[in-house]
Length: 347
Image 1 (cartoon, one colour):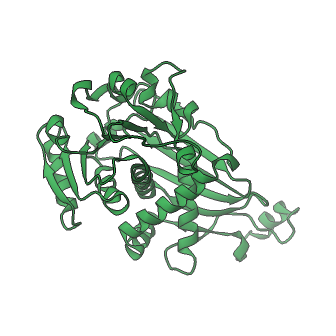
Image 2 (cartoon, rainbow, N blue to C red):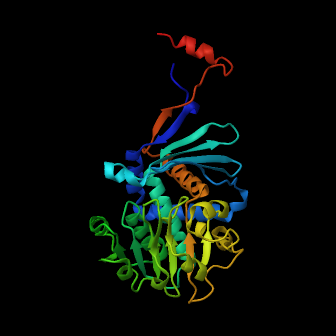
Image 3 (cartoon, rainbow, N blue to C red):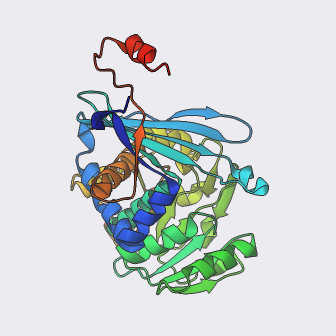
């Protein structure tokens, strides 16, 4: 028995995702994702919101990130295992699903390892566009792992960055990043220390993988008038920014109940003031208010960003060859006769 069209779910494999990205263009896709994310942040109050459901172990974390806008439901499965790279495995892998709230039927299943890298970078650059000093053109990229090129290209495409200064404790990671950015039009400078990397940079991005209370930026390293894009502190016990910098800056977050547990602000008292970035984008709260202000985006990633990315992919694959119709749902002739469907399948 052949499944009907209504039982077939579009599935975007890793190969199809890469083909889709090249079909659209990396920079165009980053801009499109940023637009979808900003649109959803502006209707933030419509969404179901909950901190991600996390299962922590000594080696890493496995998480589910669900949300719904009342019409469509989405979730992402994602892991974070920093030691995986020693075994030739990815630190982060992910897949996601969209479903119709009215029927509960899935309407999209897709890889999200590649897509998460793109949506994380698009979110960073979207926020930098709103908070970074006017005319910012130089970014320090501290931590040159799997996310670094995406962050750099997104900042170029969305926030106007033209120069990226790279640093990693592993020189091979910096060399890899620099090589991958060749041909993007970015001016790239490889640095030997974090202090060297931040020289002349108006945007400071920290993105390290170790699950530890680390201090990538110390208080004496950060002067006034910069925007800090802190994306590496993303689970309990993992930080990158010195508490004194957090005390001096104005902090912007996605969802405070999650960020206070997972972000760099886990180092601060629970009542330390933060601004939700959706409020800035929706015109309900100020963002950067002076040239000397230090703005800090303490980003841990939130389900609405994944929801936006899933919506974007659903809209872009229609009419393209970049998906497989997946036989995922049982489709009996009589919806009350599932056993009969099984019985008639005997060959």
